[in-house]
Amino acid sequence: MLRTHTCGQLRPEHIGQTVTLCGWVESTRDHGGAVFIDLRDRYGITQVVVGPESGQANVDAAGRLSNESCIRVRGVVAARLEGKKNDKLATGEVELRSEEVELLNDCDSPPFVPTQQELPGEDLRLRYRYLDLRRPAMQRSLILRSQIIKEMRDYFAENDFIDVETPILGRSTPEGARDYLVPSRVHPGKFYALPQSPQLYKQILMVAGFDRYVQVAKCFRDEDLRADRQPEFTQLDMEMSFVDADDVIGMIDGLVARTAKNILGVDVPTPLPRMTYDEAMRRFGHDAPDLRFGMEIVDLTEIAKKTEFRVFRGAADSGGFVRGINVKNAAGDFSRKRIDELTEYVKHDFGAKGLAWFRVEPEGTLWSPISKNLEDAHLAEIATAMEAEPNDLLLILADSWNVTCKGLNGLRKRLGAELKLYEPGALHCSWVVEFPMFERDEEEGRFVAMHHPFTAPRPQDLERLASDPEACRAQAYDLVINGSEAGGGTIRIHDQEIQRQVFDLLGIDEETAKDRFGFLLDALRFGAPPHGGIALGIDRWVMLFAGLENIREVIAFPKTQRAYDNMTEAPGSVDDKQLKELALRSVSVKS
Image 1 (tube, one colour):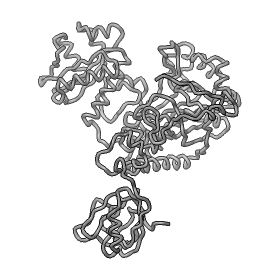
Image 2 (tube, helix red, strand yellow; image 1 turned 30 degrees about the vertical axis):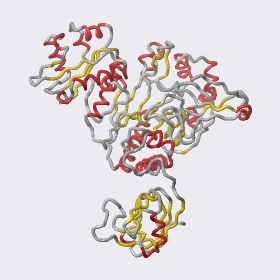
Image 3 (tube, rainbow, N blue to C red; image 1 turned 90 degrees about the vertical axis):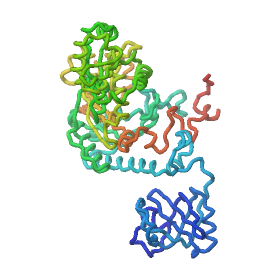
Image 4 (tube, rainbow, N blue to C red; image 1 turned 180 degrees about the vertical axis):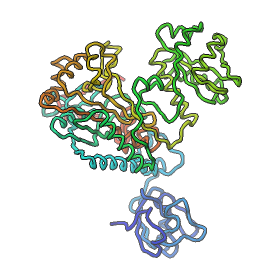
């Protein structure tokens, strides 16, 4: 070994010992005849003193060291001088008095220093990711990721789950996001697809009798990206046989409680609270509501129908909705300019026609530029419905159901963060259950599966598959942590007749079904057990547990929001010989 200890290991009990450290030079300070080096590795920082006793050649060499150079130092551990201890460092009571400094590798002038206070732009950080990963914050995130995955593996192993790897090269089943396709050299003109999830394989494993399966799986989706989404991502995939939704949810409740306790030291009471999809949309406008604070949506549509105010009455009479949120004790903090910014936000980001607002006056009445268009009695009804108190700010949208949901959810999330309505380290975990089986594809005018086409309906909704599909609710459940979907799962269809009915509703005929999913449909004919499971987004778990907002901060080598790797410059072009072997040719595309 080139080193005897790490840079975060030395303590007073090591005083007098001769040790060897390896690491990167964080900084050097020349104190006239002696050079002080802060030596860093992922474990911590140790102060190294290169003084006259080590020889002038060593002192001179230490003075020439550039930051981020990799060095090896041998010396004797000594107590720091009185008054020179550093309480901010775990190693702050000692220093290493060098006898020998060896330069393992010099560092060119770096484009940025990993320890600098102000970070450069993300593009530069991703281009030089190996430097960015030296940052303690990045290292903490990846260590946290490793710890969370270990907790997950240990938990499922203790509960008799079998870890099974499923294929990366599979069959394209175009449902949901676009597949990443891989051309086959051996089968010209044919393509593999990278898995969007191991969904079909894990169902096959249930048919095969592996009643408790788990896997840390790499998944791929060619979809539009955002701060909490990547083209390749990692999920904890789990499936169980002979269970219902309560069994799966209960298993994950235990995992959440264990992980929160062992990783963050936070007690999460179980069972986690549950809310139906309909309730979540009604109260919060989103199927993954942030429950760390209130500010629930209030429906004012019936009041709006009584008014003569064209904006409210017009929306209500045309089948739309009038809904709002109460920003408690905030009227004095919101200038007209700030309210105008919120108005532009809901118009630009969510397609709202505008944003109505009222300030609650000291006597409890509502005032805004539109107050004159509403009778006092109707203003009083609005105040009562929204539990308005002096200095509250009422924000109201009059629009379609979808726009009011999206707009008010957006306002709620934005204001919750801006007004610091929750503690930074708060962790709120809950379930949203009973999702609709289907939703309408407005462009094609047909049903699509809200989750996937193998989701089982609730037993009490089986008859509705034929009579009223839109009212049919699924045995589906999403885990929500701090307003983000941290996992989603369903009980699967194991009955061939029910599967056929669902395919019919989705417009998947027998021939298409056999072509896309034939191996699964065949398997369901051979004694398939009732089964269900869930996929947990590991990247999002780590992001949420770390209190971060960008998923790229918890992935070692992420892609940009344009699905590009700045460091390796992938995707890249390939030569004609490779294309010819794959029976492909390159076609230029105009930008």
